Image 1 (spheres, one colour):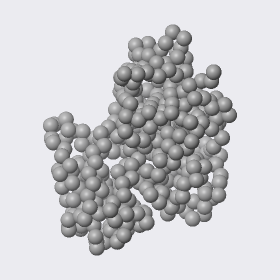
Image 2 (tube, helix red, strand yellow; image 1 turned 60 degrees about the horizontal axis):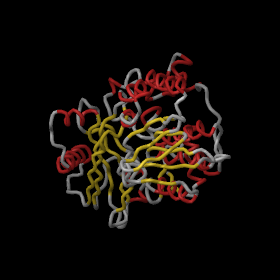
Image 3 (tube, helix red, strand yellow; image 1 turned 135 degrees about the horizontal axis):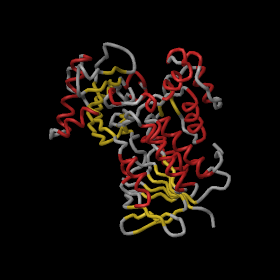
Image 4 (cartoon, helix red, strand yellow; image 1 turned 45 degrees about the vertical axis):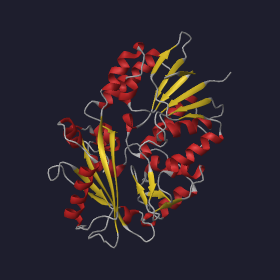
Length: 394
């Protein structure tokens, strides 16, 4: 009988890991377990009554570099029609350059200068190639999305997985993990349980730390220290309004506003998503590290309060003083992991423990080596490669 691999977490990393597992030369039985009722994690697109697309999470993907090219390969393989044209929300004083921006760190280490290193290159990897990748380069895309929003990507992955016979559990939070005498995993799901030869965990590190058995206490301790911050996303639409500036958006220094992280000009990046009749769409990002401080101090973070903060921000910064025709408010709890100083040592410690104990567990997702969509997709791919022992047919 073949191996069974359980993937924990139905966000983009877990979906991509499952996808690549099904495309291996000798694919195992794959079971995907998601605690919530929906797949896609922080990627979620909502269509308004006028046809406008509102992104509640990521809204565009960069095609640049090896990771960007690999994501375009994934999109092409799923036959999704694409239309193409800051990152961390925490406290910059506490973040690790090595973990948050590995290309900058590698450039500085190789050439003793970030600028020189970026100019000369710091160990470039061979670029994947396809007609879609060549089109993106020729047309100099800066970012891309999908006609129905980025939510089409997890939906397409879901459709592929079901066509390949992957069992998907939704609304089934994992209660605990235990190792059986024969070395297999028992995954407890409340009133039922599953058995697996290997687990890929694509859930947040801190969540995984609470599920691990006593034998993995040192690993659980390390994972529990990888924290995350919350972000409030407020989507606003204005009829008959115009932006005073052009661009993808702007960031707001914490010294000027401790709550507003920045404003994204959605209608500039993807006017195809404006609906009919077209309405000006902007998204205000609130909080991160500062939002957690408000929560800790006991402030009530009601949708009305967040909406008011967002409307005041665009009125002051962009001159959008009329009431919006549409408004969506979502508070994403602990959505952006924080790679604080020493993060890479935590990863080395975790990997060393897994290797030494020969634990049939592979880590994936935003908690470890990148929070951008491309990073999470690559994380899922690498997790599948580690389990398969070879590249999938992607």
